[in-house]
Structures are given as structure tokens and as C-alpha cells.
Length: 151
Image (cartoon, rainbow, N blue to C red):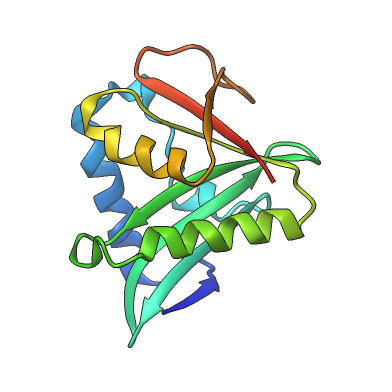
């Protein structure tokens, strides 16, 4: 598996991000969906990475600068054909290392609160993230769970 910093130009990436949005749309109202679109992920404060194997996109993930010491994890997604192969863990490990190397001291995330997102919350907890209050521009939301970890 090769993980690279990506410019989000490939059609495979757009398709994976569309699947990402479609997957959680039925579980949260529009005002509680905080995923970035392609243009948002291309902003200079976002570091976007993809995982590839034999020319096939396996997954993606990003972090976004909130301030000089704090970044937010964004757009973690594994292609459904590659689940349970360690793609998400490899991406998260790389994102944590890259955020640390960029000088961030904290990495936080927002995920859903309903049953659909239980596996994601367990995954992040196993990686050292703990529940916290809203951060950045977020506010309390019954459809959101906020998590953070020190780097």
C-alpha cells in the first residue's frame, strides 16, 4: 500500500468522496453534515492523502489546520471493496504522523452520534481519541460526537 499526499484531481477520488457523502446522508440532517466538498478539500489549510495499491484507490483521509497547534481530521473513507484490510488504520497513522510533523499538538474530529457511526467511534477511540466538547466553529449538536487526542 502506498499513501501519498494528493491533489484530488482523479475521478476515482471524486467517486470515493461522493460515496462518502451518500453513505452518511440518511443518518444526519443536512445542517449536521460537516464533510468538505472537493473544493473545500483543495484549500491550502487541508492536507489530503490517498492510499493506493496496484493503481487502485483504497481510501482517503485529510486534516485541516484550525490554528497553529490544532488540526481537524476530515474525510476518512475506505472504499467498500477494501474494508478490514488495514487501510483506515494505515491512513490514520500517516495522518497523525504528518500532523505531528507539521507542528500540530492536537488532532480533533467530528463524527456522527447515531448507531451507523458506532464503528467509526470505536476505531477512533482505539487510536487514542477521546470524546470532548465542540471545537473550532462547531456547536453542540445531537447528531455529532466530538473527539480529540494530543499528538
